[in-house]
Length: 81
Length: 152
Figure 1 (spheres, rainbow over the protein chains, first blue to last red):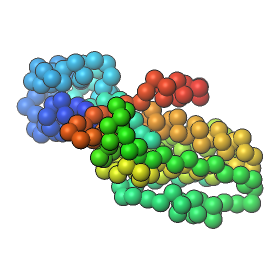
Figure 2 (cartoon, rainbow over the protein chains, first blue to last red):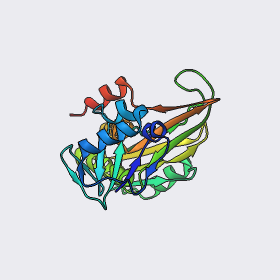
Figure 3 (cartoon, each protein chain N blue to C red):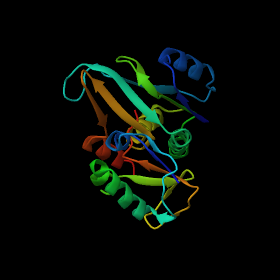
């Protein structure tokens, strides 16, 4: 699967995108844990309840199962204007 | 009638106003506009070199459309227009422009106010303020959220 980070998350992880992340099918919650283990600097943010997960342009819940071919996007709080 | 446009290059609020006004029908008795500008000073007071608004390739436009459509539904307006910048924005440049035209002034004022409160807190952008030697991500303030909460 691919993972894309927006806003402050990209800075915390150190890159905007993880391509072909070697992860079997897992839930959003499990993916958050895996990212937090691999990028401890981003752990508090990605697991802190402020960051939404999105698959196929739809916001998904923690139990959503992510397929191996999916792209998961993580959205920190937004701000326009 | 509403439109929402995401732009990646500088735009002119004067040109947006002129085209908006040109297209209005004769039911309109007043129009309200708001222009949001990139500040030259950051929240900490340091000079800003650049404001960067990251956007999502599809969902940012969707969020602008949803906000504009909701305003058109909620208020007795004849026309609404939202123009929102993304990318690297120089201090003093326009970030956002909204226009609301209505038969009566109250609806125009309220629609513009509503649009801005929702854009500040819900439009899908991630905003970074670059000052000398420092970059910081900016989120809506408590006041922004309180102002959004006025519109239940």
